[in-house]
Amino acid sequence: MRSRHSAHELLREAGQWAVSEAHAFAEMGFDSVILENFGDVPFARDRVDASTVAAMAVIAGAVREGVKIPVGINVLRNDARSALAIAAVTGCDFIRVNVLSGVAATDQGWIEGDAPTLLRDRENLAPSVRILADVWVKHARQFSSDTIGQAIEETALRAGADGVIVTGSSTGRIADQARILEAASTCAEHKIPLVLGSGVSAANMESIPPGVLSGVIVGSDLRTDGRAGARIDPKRAARWLALARKHGLVRRQPTRR
Image 1 (cartoon, rainbow, N blue to C red):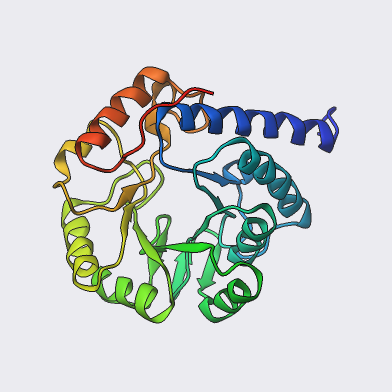
Image 2 (image 1 turned 60 degrees about the vertical axis):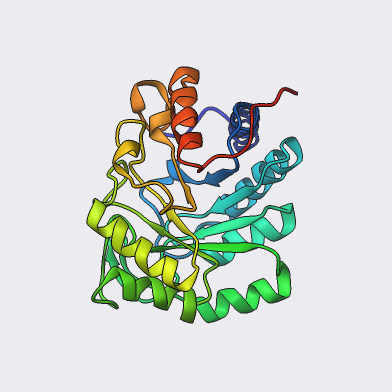
């Protein structure tokens, strides 16, 4: 059934929500925010519609103008070139790439990394944009490396990622501690920033040894009832921030506009 609202009206509503949330996160003291097309399920495998790129660019531009903290772009499922283009034209700071290196079997089918094209695009469009790349990304099975340590080396040292992201098996599931520690060992050896990317919560942060992570990506645990897509719950966010500061993962203090 067709929506009774025009594309412009829907975009304006989405943009207002994104800017409002970015302001809230910045004021609470979060270090950065990531914009992604999480509501686009089922996701396109490696190229999204032009309308998606246009909409994300408009929203990203508004968010970038509205907050001073770093802003990242992730175009799901794996449209890294569009993410880079959006970041380049809006002045955003980094992108997330689900599959930068190797081959993965996913719920969208086979996805192959294309690091050479992406890095050449970056050199031409926006050399300062950083690339955070998943290793053994969630909702997928990796077929190009036998260990997560090998995957990290190939993703960062051969494919050129500026940092790597480790996730659990799916959205909302944290990686098991053995995987985190193995990833941390490899990253420490090669001085590669390590980010934990799914299932992070106030309940499980205590199980993560201090000093092994450069950052975390947290979403659902900050929202009402811990539900993805729900409104921000200030109490949950404050509790999480206090714990993250104790682990040295958040350094900014709350601000007010």
